[in-house]
Length: 235
Length: 253
View 1 (cartoon, one colour):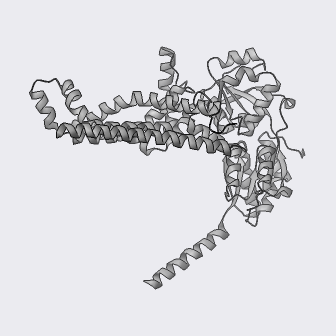
View 2 (cartoon, rainbow over the protein chains, first blue to last red; view 1 turned 30 degrees about the vertical axis):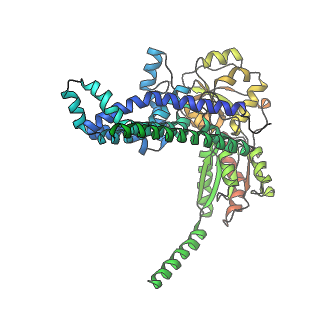
View 3 (tube, rainbow over the protein chains, first blue to last red; view 1 turned 30 degrees about the horizontal axis):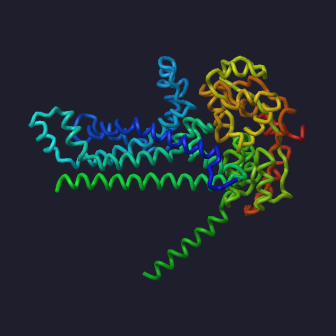
């Protein structure tokens, strides 16, 4: 076996991990931006509760989060049974469930830096835009969002990395199905449990490390470009 | 300042020596033996006054931990394959190995399920769009026995793409109990312990390798009562407790 070529099981795990993390990011990021903006700009009754709920997956043991997801979204769970009967959507034992688990776990890691970057944007800039006649949404999209972009990017990268590495909630919620829910982390865990799995575990570790490095370098390059652009605008 | 440091150092050292002498008798056992081992441990403590601490998990997880130096005195495996692996690694004493029980593999489901025939069509119909919860066949003995049995019966191709592999047999059992999966492949003893499932079909004993639970002392075992506990495990009182949970023992009284 040529050791630089990936075996089918490894490809499967890698592609599945990227698919799950991308899906998780696609849904969780816009939601995180909205929630972060709400928490940053508005003081409303229940602000503390919302903040606490957002951070719950960060503080709870991942297996507990996975178990809660299982109870809620399982076949007979309150949300799961409605989704199954009305829309035909199942999360349990499906890659979509893995994406849900990854998204839930990554959510607080995204909200924090995005909220901080929104708080760093001077609200007077938004007021100025609105006083010049821009609608609230337009001022958000053309003034606030671009200024907060480095923080949003940081949150997105952090969230993607967490989604790629998610283990406890995933294995508890959607089990360990090759091709469906066996992401790199779960494949590594399986390899470590097998008597002759050390070589496989080592290879998966290398693969996971390379992908993680790639993502971090890409994010660093992107962030640098962004900073140049924004720095240039100020100069 | 220096005096207090010396006092602190002596204190810490004293604690570690005391702790070593007080380290409890530690037994790593396959998760399917959880309740039976609990009772055996209580019986041993009543008889000898020595408390036993258990760690239950999938056999593969425990084996890897012992290989990495986990402080277990006795290891109870759900198959001879993992026990032989540890013997090869030199972390278990081969002369202490004794088989203490056997078991049967069954298909279990929620209480309101009807009994099953072991045929591909019936099982496919019962699974519907759901999955078969099973302990991971690559790493957990229960999954391995189950896969062998289903293969021998010609049912494996039907279920192979519809599995939900779990870390140990008890997680698979819980999935069926909650109704997350219509069926689970578990030991007869697991189905007996779980009030929310019933046995729907039993895999014939000839369809899979003989299920054997070997128990042995680890090479790192340093609790003075470790050998006594292993002796107790292989004795008549433990066998009676095992039988009461549905395990099959060799010494039928």
